[in-house]
Image 1: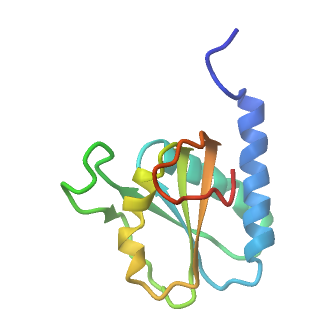
Image 2: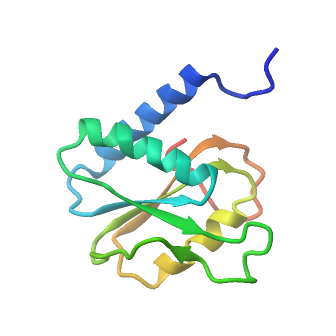
Length: 139
């Protein structure tokens, strides 16, 4: 018996389905950003972008969000690129696992001051042990 929750085939299927769901829910949007939390979240976001780019007519921008996961208040959250068109843009924050919601909430900080249209969330695994009011839009 394997220690992993999902097989490679299951993960690939979930990535494709999330890419389709993002397109279905945002096909009228002008600007979409995937904010992948550094580590597993960024890897997951990169894989979603690859699948999304295969099916969509318009590009999606990828941003790496760096945060100190053990002590998020000790240093600022950093983005590897700017959100160049924040007015009415959609940000989909991506992480590999939603557990307490703590990392996700702190990772949102740079986006909260922007005039975004909406912020959504995508996770590969939803463990439902929340301490913060975070819900998984795509999982």
